[in-house]
Length: 87
Image 1: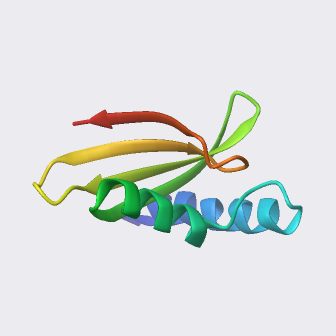
Image 2 (image 1 turned 90 degrees about the vertical axis):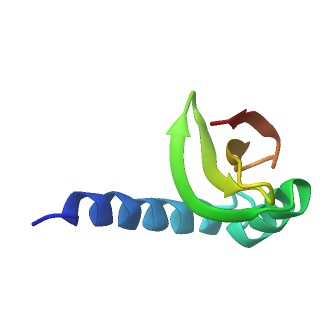
């Protein structure tokens, strides 16, 4: 079924994020969304949640006010910005 793998992957992101939050391993997504949007002044259009190098990472895709697409990786436990890259 077209799109099913994408839905499953993102559904898994949601479940993993919720479980990590319940264990106290991550900052709530709403807090990080406000920080990213406030820092860049744009609109978050995509979010992914992954485990990389033994830590939880939120990957945000942001459309800046000038139309530029920016990818931002944030450590989900500390809220530290790990990578910010214009596309």
